[in-house]
Length: 219
Image 1 (tube, rainbow, N blue to C red):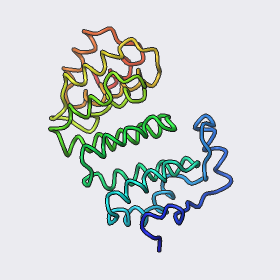
Image 2: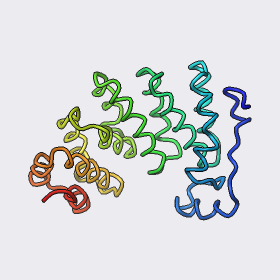
Image 3: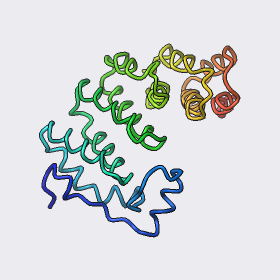
Image 4: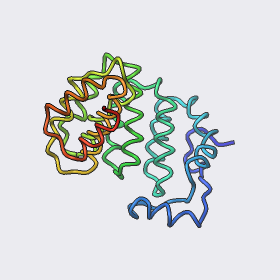
């Protein structure tokens, strides 16, 4: 059995045939072990289970060590570990995790981190504004993508003013991943409040991409 917190004892077993195709899918930005998501989750299941018993500082160290591994799948394991332990973290730990958003940044890791922050917000609604401010108007557009998508898990509790602020700040930003996020956030919320989204799209000069994505479920 793995020793708790010993990252060097945890090794993913991949397929050589999958390494290059997986790297190519990510524009060759990262190297891969060659293990797809279902196999990765199965291989890391026991390790993540053990992480729930680690002292907090050991857990944070383990997450950091995993994130510094060269193969991309280890970043996924680190984020999975964060999500599995989300109820153990305070705002201090959660705010520290924002550093990882800006490391090895690409849509796959950023959107996985968004789930971590979004889940934390669901559990601590009174800290939503405080967390939002860490991403809102940030110089790094990946951080701002999270500001736009932070409430993606929410329906009744979604703060419309917060969502509008995040979107309008980047309304004219010529960045695909920002415009895609705007459309995604609006499309998702339109399932719950289509009239608000329809009004928002009409009232604001959004990009064609954002408008198209936002309007998928609107009639």
